[in-house]
Amino acid sequence: MRVLGRDKISKFAARHSGTKRPLDAWLAEAQRADWKSPLDIRKRYGSVDFLPDNRAIFNIKGNHYRLVVRVRYRNGIVLVEWIGTHAEYDRQVF
Image (cartoon, rainbow, N blue to C red; front, top):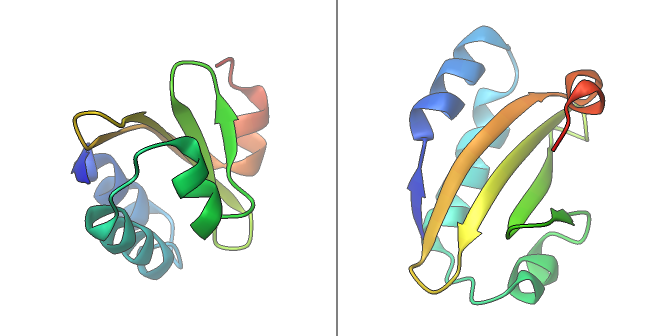
């Protein structure tokens, strides 16, 4: 998959110690992936949640952080929409 918005991940990791390694691992996996449907994501990430408009929510670093992406399955694109703490996520309206 082609991941757009990697700068958001880099900036977040720079501000939140301990997230660089898990975020880099997620990014590397996403770039190697060939997701054709939400089921493909679910096979690898059992705890992933889904929102309308082809959005997926990944738990990062033991569910301390959440990463929200929009997936364009046909085009092979993943767009990073939002990343934050679990508490911040609970205050978001998606």
